Length: 269
View 1 (cartoon, rainbow, N blue to C red):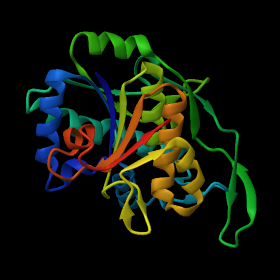
View 2 (view 1 turned 180 degrees about the vertical axis):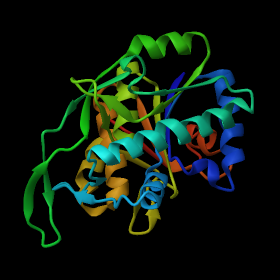
View 3 (view 1 turned 180 degrees about the horizontal axis):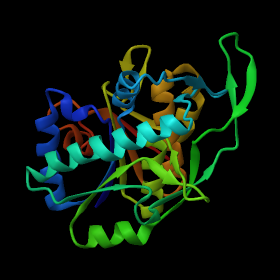
View 4 (view 1 turned 60 degrees about the vertical axis):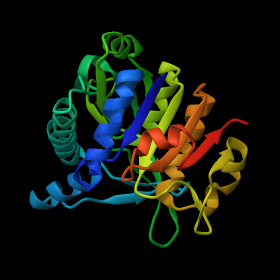
């Protein structure tokens, strides 16, 4: 089975990180794995130390994201590809997992179209058009590069930075990156690790939901989970069989959700 797993950049700082790494080790012995990581909080912390104030914007669909100008993109690349990716790779290798760290720039793994303009909603709820900065939407995944690594039993660890048509680094959303990678590889499962049990409605865990039902509730869930549900729908539309949303800080976080013992299962049916 081929699994694409998205985890937050802070996941290895949590008390349960050893549980996650142990779970990944077991899974890597039986399945092919591709990991995509985040790390936005550490980017924000580092930017503050460097005196670069971070600006966050909200789209009309309710997505909250970092506004990425040139200087922010440099900090983002430094922290995500230069620090967090290597910390994750080291943690995995220390447990005998043959991890290989990559950004979307390496081998042009992730190609994206740079967004020329962004439509945002300001504090008063009004729509505005601003320059797109250094953000992009992935339009190509170098499947053969990932395939070569997977064939040799390596575990690719991917930083969500893509390359533009002009070979510039672009900030791309981590959850959506995982969805596009899963779709391109025709993965069996996409697993989105988060800091809550799964998709919650009125404070209660939803153990299973169809894509149609998920679309209907998008407007009533929080911004963070909304991004994950959108990513899940993208992956299902591209042929991924099942998307699982679950906590990354519990016992056997991935194995338990694969067995439908925890988290939320999102399917086409």
